[in-house]
Each structure stands twice: as C-alpha cells, then as structure tokens.
Image 1 (tube, rainbow, N blue to C red):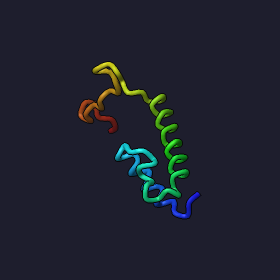
Image 2: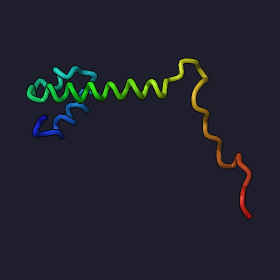
Image 3: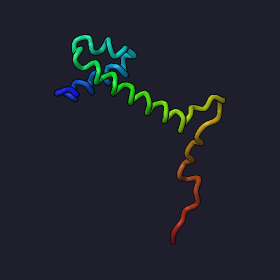
Image 4: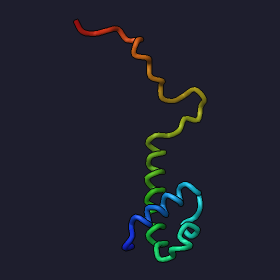
Amino acid sequence: MTDNPRLAGKLLDELHESHATPEEVCRSFPELLPEVRARWRAVCRVRIELDALFPVPTVRGVGAPALLPANRFPATGP
C-alpha cells in the first residue's frame, strides 16, 4: 500500500474520466501502479456486478416507469 491513498484515489478518478490505462495515469508515479491496478480491478468488478443487477434496457420504451405528478393522486386525510 502507498503512503498517499489520496493520490491513488485521484489517479483512479483520472483513470475513470480519461479512459486511459493504469500505466498512463501512473506515468509520474510508477510506485503507485500496483495499487492503482488493484483498485481499478475492484472498481471494474463492482461495475460488472451492478450491470448484472441493474441491466440497461435494450428495447426502446422499456425501463423504469416515470413518476406520476403528485396531483394525480387523491388527497388523503381529514
């Protein structure tokens, strides 16, 4: 592990935003490459699990229903 986890976190952010490789974002910090690779693999595993749990609809018009406006429901109470 590194003495600077914040820097590794920033490199992960850069990796995500730029679609670069771990080697590219760690060019100035080669000592962080093993940690960034390990963290990136963990992020990718979580992304795969989330995609499996919440797949993106492939058919147009299929997906989560839109929320109805509040005035579409009858008033309740006294």
